[in-house]
Length: 132
Image (cartoon, rainbow, N blue to C red):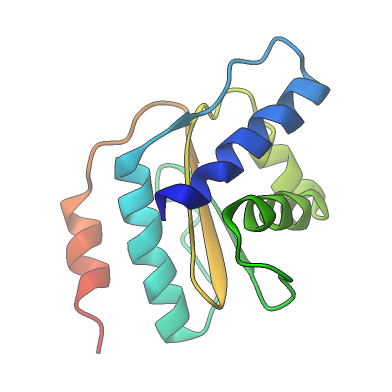
C-alpha cells in the first residue's frame, strides 16, 4: 500500500502547476492505516458512502475503469478521477491539506487528507476491523 502513495507525488506536481509556492503534501502512516481500514469497509459494504464530519478530508472513488494496477498508473488514475469533480478537485488541491495517504483495493480507493498529522485512531480500528 505504501507504493500507492505515488499519489502524493502526483498530487504535488498537480498542486505546483496550480499554485507554484505550495508546500508539498506529506505521507502519513496513521492516515494510511485508517484509509486502508475504511477502504476494506467500503469493499465489504459495496458502497462509497462516508461520514463528511470525520475530522479530515476523505475522497472515495471506484477503480472499475482503471487500466493498470501499477502504483504510478493508479496514482494518475485517482488524480484524474478526482479532477473530474469540481468539489473533489477543490479538496485535493487545497494547499492547507498537507498530510495525505491513499489506499486502493480492486474495487475502490480512499484518499485521506488533513491539515495536520492525525494520530492513530483506535476507535476507527474497532469500528472497521470486526466486520461481519
